[in-house]
Figure 1: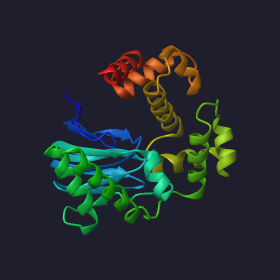
Figure 2: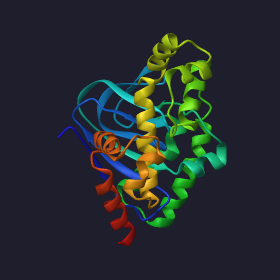
Figure 3: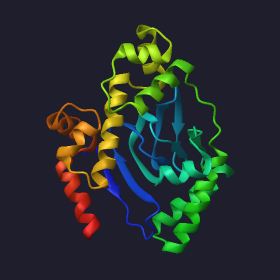
Amino acid sequence: MLSQFEPLPLAFSGLRATRLVSTVPYVGMKEHYAVARVESGHSEWWSRGRVWRSAPGGLQLQGPGDVHRDVSRQGPIVYQIVSFPTDTVERLAGKMVLRPTLDADDPLGAPFQRLHDAVQRRAERFELEVLTTEAIAALVAVGSWRSQETRPVRRALELLRERMAEAITLDDLAAYAGLDKYHLCRAFRRQIGLPPHSYLTRLRVMHAKRLLHAGVRPTEVAAQVGLYDQSQLNRHFRKLVGTTPGRYFAQVSASKRA
């Protein structure tokens, strides 16, 4: 086993919870605002231009588009992850850059710890709804962390997110960022953790997942996310999600009928 994601059953539909067990360093990009609690294991991981440390009980906070890359770890690591609807969070506080970590005993993390405890014991719907609401409100308190991204990289991210379905060239990106392409590529990888093309591919696959979940058929998705054809979508989707768009669409459709 390398990395195994296990969805956790919840009585409240306004929250998603997942258990991640991984025996190798993990690299991923977040789709939603999420707070992960380390259940076991120690690790060092990179995000937003620097390395952070995590220990059991500690919290990792990330928002849409944030890259997480493990640098080192002591044995297998287990996370419990709770994810919040992006539109709900941003309706309350706008787009936020979250403080990446909170220690186990940090008072700012108390609302998230209570929610994680409730998820573990499969609390009833009303309790989960209350604790989720408190946790989303608590995100605002940790949402003023100063980003380490420079202005050119922020502008590059802005263009990639706004025009992901278009054919973007490196010259386009550099011109919009206001930096020559050689320095931009170096700065982007150093600050974001991925080169621009890999970041764009992950954005497109994340959007493909949202479209499939909304009922768009797999044959129609590739063009809507800026990929050349179905085979290109299949290749990237399988690599990043672990299954094909067709199987993912079937699983989502079946869960909606259940």
